[in-house]
Length: 125
Image (cartoon, rainbow, N blue to C red; front, side, top):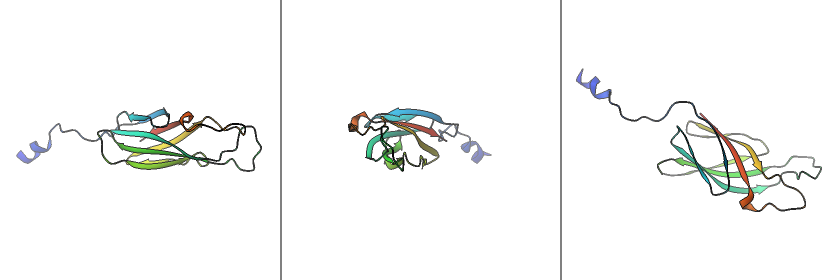
């Protein structure tokens, strides 16, 4: 009986409730995921070969979005990549991180400065 009483403490446990959060990040910005004890940081776009909006292309192309996830209280980070070409989500622990959109969309007449990108992420459990 004494052993069971010792197990019934109010010690904190990792969150297990639903997480369904949408965040829009600029390069270098970090978002805390409410209820998940996690932070997600948008590092930048390492390649953008998407078909420009004012061009005709055989393939749609791809942009590579680099993010990192880490425990909210600090700790080691996990680098992750998301692609516009496949929109395949990635896993970080119990979370699924999906790229919904990457803006701005390219035009053949202009280059996108790296600091103008915005990544819209959907984070779910």
